[in-house]
Every structure is written in C-alpha cells, then in structure tokens.
Length: 314
Image 1 (tube, rainbow, N blue to C red):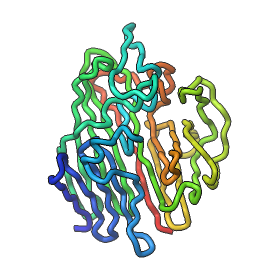
Image 2 (cartoon, rainbow, N blue to C red; image 1 turned 135 degrees about the vertical axis):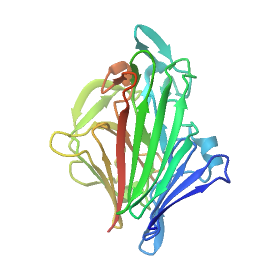
Image 3 (cartoon, rainbow, N blue to C red; image 1 turned 60 degrees about the vertical axis):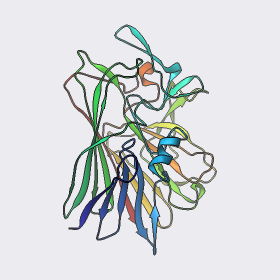
C-alpha cells in the first residue's frame, strides 16, 4: 500500500499520522483540537516540517492559547468585539478566551475530537474526526456537530474538509476557519508571498474591521516579505480564478487553495518572524457584529468548507 494511517494512543489524546510511503511525505494530526501539528516532506537530503506545531499533545493542551497554533476557529473567527453579539433580538456574550477586551478565536480550539474512520489506499490516506458541541458556553447556546476530514494524496497534497450541521429550532450564526503557522526554514524575510487579492479590509486599532475596503495590490505578484509586517484580512478575487496563496523560498513552494466557502485570507507575521500564519476564513473578524460574510445556517442543512496545502520541492 502506497499510503498508510498510523494512530498513536500513547498520549492523553490520539496522534494520527497520514503517510505517503513512496515519498516520505506525512501529516501529523492531533485529536486534541483536530489540528495539523506537522506537515513533513523530504527536501534536499533532509526532512522539512512546514508547520510550526507543538512538541507533544501535553504541550498543545497547555499552550494552545499562546498563538493558537493550527487552531480550528469555530463558531466565530479571530476577534469578536467585547465578546458580544445579537441574534434573534437577544444579546449574547461568550465566556471563553479574551485578548484584552475582545473574545478571540472561537470556542473549539481545545475541543477533543473522536476518530470515526480512517482509510488508506494506493492514492490517499485519510482520517475523519467529529466533535459535538453541546452549547456549553452560554454566550453561544446553539449545539452543533463539526466533522473534520483530513486527507493526504499523491503530489504532497493535504486537504481538510469541515462539515458543520445542527438541529436547533432556528438558524444559527456561524463562521469557520483555520489558524496554521507555516515555515519554510530560515525566517520570514527569506520568503516570498503571492495571493490573488487586491482588497484589504481596513482595521481599527483593535484589529476589528471598520467596514471600509482598501486597495492593496502588493501581493498580486510574488513579493519578498523582507521587512513586511502583516496582521490583515484580504478578500480573494473569485470572479476569474480560484483563490490561491503561494509561499516560497529557493527550495520549497507551499500552495494554499481554499474553496469558495473561505473567501477571506488572514495573514499574520508574528514577532519572532520564523513563521507566518496563513488563515482561511469563511468571514471577516467580528462578523457576528459587522455581518461581513456571516453565515446564518438553517437547521438540518450541512455547510462544507475545504482548503488544501500542496508542497513542491523546487
């Protein structure tokens, strides 16, 4: 078999490895958070891990809120102003993690997922995980199920499909996203970035969208990240091309390809400048309040979000 799935039960929560035995490319996924902890590929005589992850499940459990590395963002993304929003005439305030005055990065970043299926063939290896949110945070009292389908395919392509369903008596507000930090070795100043957007969402001093859009064409062509600092949201151009983001250096090219369910790209260069967060989002930060691409999901209607990460050795 060209692909295999290995499940390690020695940690508090399972660690799943999807592996291409022909090339050595592999993805390491934690049941804790459902997150991608490593994406390894042999390149130029050594193995490179393109994901800035955690040393262990215990490390992830302890430090997930320090940067939210690879976190699933759900049921809201990035910041929510003062942790408050109104739905069906009722004001809600979420109780989970705050950064300053604002709630940040949803409620499921530390959820523990159940493995429901795994499969390997000559062309791919995959694992399915599920978490059933019960409405335990009284600021978001709407139960829903979230299914993650991780799949590693030939060509060093890793895809993640998220499917959300619920059976509340009414439609519920929702946003979805991922928060991975990628590294190509060296530092951010050694890499180039390109993505098909020419529209940036204007932020205020709290990194909340003002509602205005700014023209920003810097990344329509690959450009060096030397001395470039980013913590911004961009709207993909979707009218004539599939959304795409490409991070490169002299050795590796990482291509991120979200589907139409992720029209927003958030890019963040952390202070250490050893990695870069490339976040696919279904809507803008604080969209429970500003409404930018906010989903209001009817009961019984699954919503699917997919993005993929493909690595090429140059």
